[in-house]
Image (cartoon, rainbow, N blue to C red; front, side, top):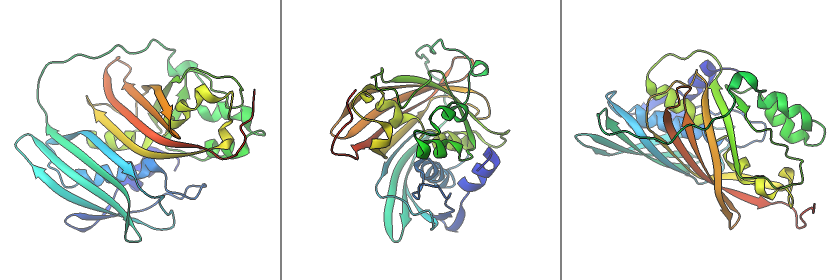
Length: 290
């Protein structure tokens, strides 16, 4: 996918019955369904069953089985509750008769209330930074598989503030900042921008959790997989404008890494929060030493 128009087409679903939808699958070079695709399509399936005056404010998902990129995905929506102010949906993603992903989402009517937020980090703007694709040239020969992943056309542009060197055998603080923006202009409802962020939110989280451990294990010695993922949407935003994702990983243990992120627009408004726990398993019996 080269731009957000192609991504929007992928997120779009075919209605089979009132609560059943079919989604096409993006062919990744690593052979498994990309988690962000399932997050975005599951949220879209839920959106298709909710009145337009209600907007998702939170979604919580669990990745159960690896998805097969050669097959479509069926999304089954359970209309759990339609209340006066809130609507609740549960979505199950199915392949070969088995659930590969499960998500709950809550929607709310627009209401006025008290407001506060944390401050946006003071970091350089995206205009002064190189994209992750440009930075990937530094490990083209040493980490060819990782380099290949970065060269695959993506509908989202990423500009890291801190330059991460996956070959640097020194530990680093589990914190980073990344500017993100969809490639191309976007129209449509705020829900589309939320779905596109859901797609983008599966990038950069787990890699933040491995930064403190680069002195004992290399990136290519790890198996990474998303386990569960949650997003809270605080304010409306546009994915075709630059947004800053501030990431930190408070903990890693039991072969799992935990990362949380806060998303700000250029005005400094906190528009969304995301958390993820994922599998971080060492592939080799021996870890390389510094």
